[in-house]
Length: 252
Image 1 (cartoon, rainbow, N blue to C red):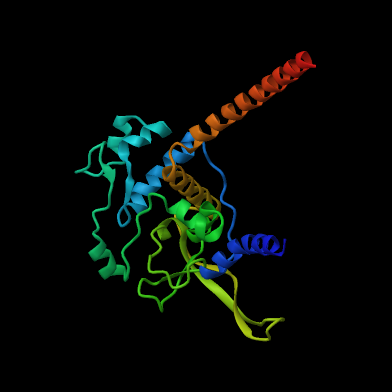
Image 2 (spheres, helix red, strand yellow):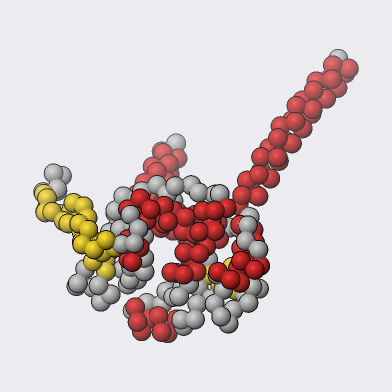
């Protein structure tokens, strides 16, 4: 019993420990957007802003037909000149170039939402908060820093949409340890972006929703199938229960 209690406590604390390993910044819940318009906008943002450096080598362009795009739309809006509809989503940047320019090779984003889910609770919440907490930092090689991932190597690729912001910090004494801590106290807008804060948050929500869909394109069908399987098992359980009652009634 003591071992079971310790195991339950460890499982409860696991998300918090994982979050602390990434900087400890609280994550905002990502809006759940599964409509086709949001997924299509997210795919457009992904191709225009993420695919320049990152690959999604487990995804093919023609799989975008599952979110309502036809082949002509994919060719006209989401393909680079040399790519074909059946090609994998691969970046032209090599890992060697990425490491030379940013200090680390940009990771493949095929299943990044699922990967982050294992580290910080909800992977969608992690990516959603991460893309909204960049701030200007002249001490960093790229000129940018991040609250969710401090000293991140990746620059703020969406800065033209969000604008340039400074992060304000205050020094406070921790009431438990007595140590002085560096605490985030809000953002200061230095240069406006092409989007308002609300529009930018909505765009990031679309992008995260697409990345979540990309990590498992069949997840919606799997959920729908799961509902039918549970209904079938429920009906079967009732029939078996009545059959069993009828059988033992005759035996008596």
